[in-house]
Amino acid sequence: MINRIYQIIEVAKDDDVLSKIYDIIMMITIILSIIPLCFYKQSHIFLLLDKITVSIFIVDYFLRIITADEEKKRGVISYFLYPFKPIALIDLLAIIPSFIPINSAFKALKMLRLCRTFRLFKAIRYSKNIHIIVNVFKHEKDQLITVFALAVIYIFTTALIAFQVEPKTFGTFFKAIYWSTVSLTTVGYGDIYPLSDIGRFISMLSSFAGIAIVALPAGIIVAGYQESLKEEKK
Image (cartoon, rainbow, N blue to C red; front, side, top):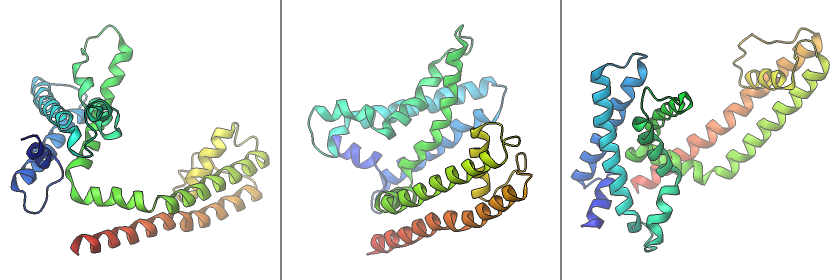
């Protein structure tokens, strides 16, 4: 019985109808739970919708706890380790905010209601394609980390140079980091920009470098995704 529940709540296999239905229901629930977050004013309908969707999330969380030992068969320890998994923490953060009173005297607690946005990340569980992408990140993590490290080093280098060249434009090092990041990603919001010729030259180099650095991880992910699709078909 427990094993069958585990099979149903996991990502649907091609021949498991109940698992597919469960995934569809959970995806619809996630979408419905996000709707109230798109409005500042919370009506009674939104509050009711939140209660219904959270109730479904609680049932899902409970089912995953009682089937925690089905994946690796570690015994009792599986039930204690499961709540600390990243995806389990996301599930918990998606549930807890709904139990915080709206008129709570502790206004700081209201900030926790923002955690409801974590419900979007719950979709990772119920999409086969998202699972493939997650696996691609796992398999290509060394290359992606290398590219990320290269980007970070370049951002800090250009920020340091700009910070020294134009102290008036970049009053703090954080502003220089911000400018360097948006320049590297070729976004360039235009709210902070260098005024000297050297600063502008650095900005030009940063934009050209950004095209290459941003393209690298995209190519790695696409290649890994295509490879994973081929393996799935086999």
